[in-house]
Length: 259
Ligand SMILES: O=C(O)CCC(=O)C(=O)O
Image 1 (spheres, rainbow, N blue to C red):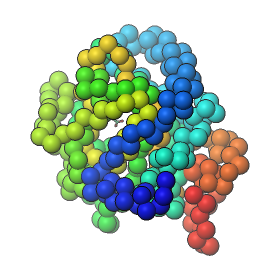
Image 2 (tube, helix red, strand yellow):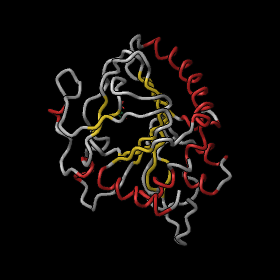
Image 3 (tube, protein in one colour):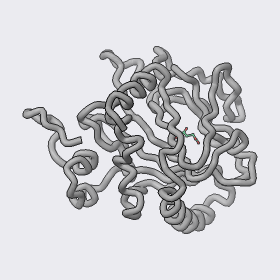
Image 4 (cartoon, helix red, strand yellow):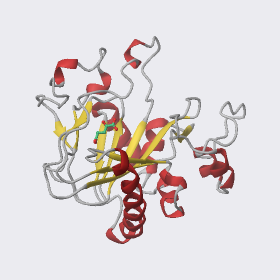
């Protein structure tokens, strides 16, 4: 991707808080990812079912570390230049990636929210804090509980109104909301500060996502088992990937970043 193209998309992202990139992964590129995802998820599913017989969302952290097939997603050529243009040269990973699974015929699991509702209260000019790339492993249609967001809400100066979510903890329909649907291989890139939710999956098909999360080097990673391990970072040989994996200093007196 040409840098002027990535820059134009980054400017749109700044205004709207999200981008939808069709064909970020081709059918041939998707195939090995889907195969490993299905194997990992079906083993995890058995574990989850022991404690929760009716899960609404199943989630596997540290995805990038689970199989080398997923590693290239950290600097994928059709999406990474956009994340790099949005965050700038000190870009790093905010977590080790996640596999996300919404079973067929499952209820909603979360109401309207921002991932960091406290940011409007921080007294410095608004930063991009987390930028997430969510890759669709299969087609996602309206009835499959798509990620749903309110364009531009990442710039709000107040938290997401609690009345956007009903007493049943299901999201209410809000004027202007956009349900992100698309073909397998699509990537949703979003500012995680945007007000978002997802609806129940009323279809007979599971919703499958691979997620990669970026941040600035000087921010802490997502903790509690989501973060990249030191060992994984140290194994990387490519300077850009080492930076992405938080190896090396973040203060860079010399100003030379690798990503
Ligand atoms: O797509 C979804 O299920 C919603 C995801 C979400 O709200 C989140 O990860 O914070």
